[in-house]
Amino acid sequence: MRVDKFLWCVRYFKTRSIATEACKQGKVRVQDAIIKPSREVFPGDKIVVRKNQINYELEVLDLPQSRVGAKLVNLYINDITPKEEFAKLELLKYSRDYYRKKGTGRPTKKDRRELDDWFEAPENENEEEKDN
Image (cartoon, rainbow, N blue to C red; front, top):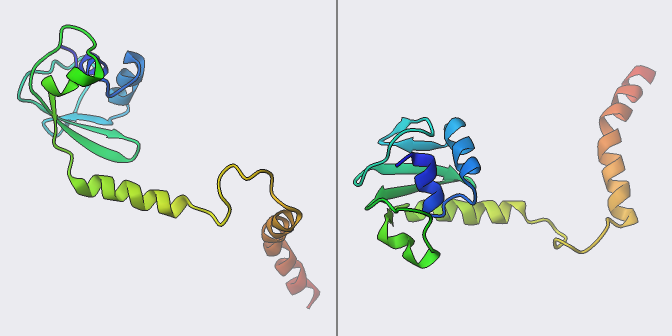
């Protein structure tokens, strides 16, 4: 079975075209080698998929005939992704947090002024140096 079709069948990608594109971009590796979407996958192969800034490591147990339900995915793959990868994702979530909660609306006047000052600051410094 083709690797792009396999990843779609075991629900790692929503569509087969997204799985194909990920293979073309080098985000999928089989046995530590970057592969093309048409590469055949066999039971026992180890696949590394880079998705959402996490390197998922999968071991192929069996090949499905077609796309399987979410409850049956474990019959075909064994997820051997290290816990450290998921810890990195948690750290990324914290780094994206701002002082305002997401969805609290438009920036306030104070926020706008601070943004304007921040964008205009380097230009003002250069003008002051020219005046002296």
